[in-house]
Length: 280
Length: 280
Image (cartoon, rainbow over the protein chains, first blue to last red):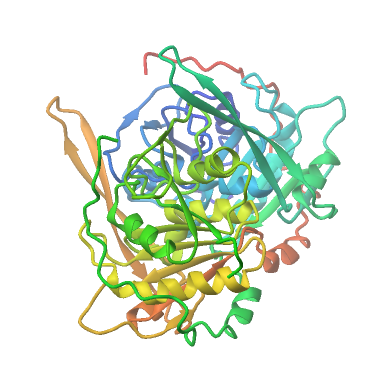
């Protein structure tokens, strides 16, 4: 490493007091100069939410000895934006790491993941970024078996970089009695969450719902993140910012959509701007 | 159309009382049987957030004459999940439409967009889905010039379908004195938001921030959504659920990441699970 240590911004979505981010901070201290900007409260499932309708708060906190740390009232994506534009305004981080998340962020979960949205936000800004997640939801999860792989991945990225706009989605198997096998480069499995809603009544007799669900993986490929984790390997999926489906795009150009005529009646007048709200 | 009219679920992210969704409901009534499940309050910028740490509320509301409508306390993605699994549990919608959003959702904004996250959620469930946005943030925006294109696009999808897992991101130019030109199939422009933070003090002397920013498009391609809109055309971008960057993935398989050794010191002991919180 050169005379100036690399600057590493650490964030997460479980909140600044989660054990996962403490593990990540300790590891990143070995690789560079660390600054923490993380949500003041848990933000799991926040996807790529940002805060535009209310103001953001930012407080310096003294919870990581010798490391500047700030808690932010916003989402993980907000934390990265505030870190870059306010906390670190005169210096760009060399790496943004998010996590270690308490819980898996494989497959389609990347879309719901606050952990990954922080990393993706950094990639939008052109900063190398990695989201780390452990396939164990427990607050008291053991992260120690991930350290070697985590440092290898972060070290490689600091040394060699990653292409602009790419974010690495890293998932570690939960601790078991077997040592982790190797790090595998994977594609996102084609799986999904099958939701269930638990309907209840509150003490006033009003209906409410808890969302829950189970993960369903019908993707039998052996090159997926899910498969790697089943093999007790660490999965690394490179994620891109461009959602365009180019295969379909080429096909859609043959659609005769502008030539459609006729069967649809025209709307005669603009819809009134104000709805008749009736005590809803 | 067959004897049974197609079932169309309408949602949005500006909230069930926004003018944009009223316009969409009126249009969709011409194409099928409509059910509305939309957020009870504005959810702009919510990305693909879902509600897992608190319960969800759902109330039937009588604001669209003759149309079953429900307001939900959750995010746009929650609305689609609750609609599918609870409101419509015995019948799958033939189409999910989201919008019409007050404001553009082109380019990278697709990642922050609650409008698009509702449509993407439907695509995850295997339902054809379209997000519609108008490049005009105003509450009193005029949507009337979009009706013809909107009905053509939704009509085409109802008639011909779209491939499983694909979501259409449709943006309309703001109303001008020129009529809209054609519908164009586009790729997502490689642009981004450059944030700014407006720092203020509250009446108690404590610091807070408003996030704002400007849209920066350095993508000079003529096949992008941004370019189409500049030409007063409607843009349609097909979006996919798989974020894997396959080009990079092939390259990463040559990384010698598992063979990395040495320079990184090992972590000797697990990090304590509980942080020393000091009145933060």
